[in-house]
Image 1: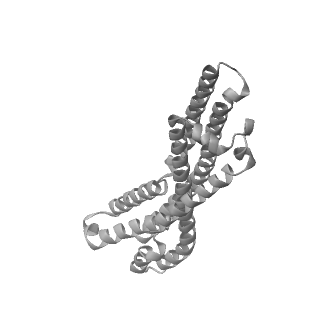
Image 2: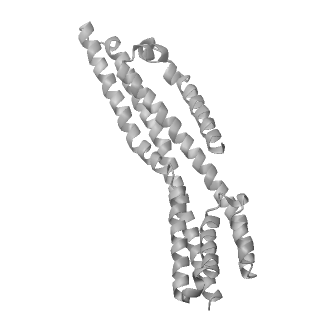
Image 3: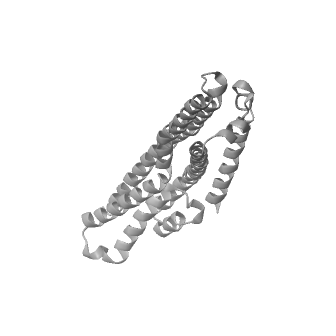
Length: 257
């Protein structure tokens, strides 16, 4: 529900920004007294389809970015609260309390809780069932592999949707370029139909081409910015998970010594 609500907010914000941009003088007034409504009415079907695709890409990229930023902020905040508490439980030897804390809904966004929980549950399972038939090194290897699997799954979950931003950022300019080409073609069609190369014959087509170019850049630039920002956050989370995994394995080594 929270993710759906964030996507709806992002769509409203994007639509508002689009309306503000289109209401500015640069869009409202063109060469020869053309306004945006006139240009839209004279746009070809292909150009309109390109514009619709760009707006959909814009809504989607902003929605993904807002949802990921919200999730990452939750993960960082909950992990800061979780780390000292679970460390205290482990220091006092309260394994069950540490597992209960890690599986609490209060820390469902915490990437550290997911990784530590996997290691603690595997260690407890080995101690209660198969630990007696395994030597110390085998138990530690089993726990280590469980932590590695949890780290990989958590990292994959953190990356969810981020690659979409890279795709949109790299393809939006080319989609806009397609609209630009269509606009230029319409400009030449205007010259051919009037038999004149005056500004009146080409103004509508050129305006259409420039609008499509601007839309492509308007979609691509924020998507690239968000992608780079979110990628840096993912790398930071990966470092935190690796450090926590190493510390947890060291804890089990000392505990089983």
